[in-house]
Amino acid sequence: MWNRQTSAMRGIVLMCLSTAAFSIMHGLVRFVSEVLPPFQIAFFRNIFGLAFLLPLLMRSRFAILRTKRIGLHVLRGVINILAMLMFFTALSISPIAKVTALSFTAPIFMAILAVLVLGERLRIYRWLAILSGFVGMLIILRPGFVAIDMGALLVTVSAALWAVAMVIIKILSRTDSSLTIVAYMGIFLGVFSIFPALWVWQPFGFQTLGWMVLIGLFGSIAQVSLSQSLKETDPTALMPFDFLKLIWTAMIGAWFFAEIPDKYTWIGAAVIFLSGLFIALRERRAKQGP
Image (cartoon, rainbow, N blue to C red; front, side):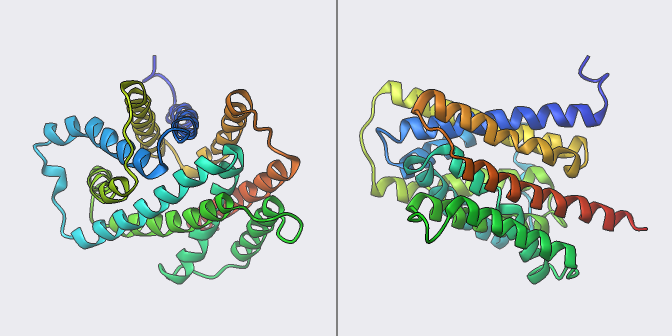
């Protein structure tokens, strides 16, 4: 029955699954952060995520690790772990819906980097969309009207770092397969998260360990579903469904943590998301030509 569906429908279903899995993982991170430091949680998320990746590596007899750009993989790993540590810390101290809303700025930052680093053409619609995205960010943060909390600052920097990582992925994809890129991400994130975790290490029980296994499981489900959805259909067809993350995290925040997003979070998130969607749609039209 699954194979009878169109590739677009399969991509949409997988994208929706990815948003749900990411949201559940974020809720679990917020829950576990009440007893363990975010750096320690990030370590176990990476370790268990790598464990779920091991069967894939063994099946290929580790052939997917062949690469001529190991330095770029290391750089991507360093940037990724910094982004993850900041994001997990933000989840532990800020409402998860607000964190999710601000994370939508990543495509805006990536559009800037595509011009500065990848040498893509400077188009007026791109800069208008980028400007709109930053307006949306200001609506959420409201600097000068309310104090900008550390969580909001961390997730914004995390989104910028994630955009840098995405640019590196785009460069790596010219020579390496997606499996190779994902494999090295799992390996380096696991290695690089050891020392931050040891710095803040706290003892925990089997119940907490079980929650962290779930964090790794849902993180892996989210990553695999997202990667497969992008293989099934065009990213621009999937991007509107990415906004579901805000819906799911708002529900989780309200139900489990008594966090109700204010109207500025919803309005700002919508402006940011629509800006990113506009950039994606115009990029696809530009590639298709007149």
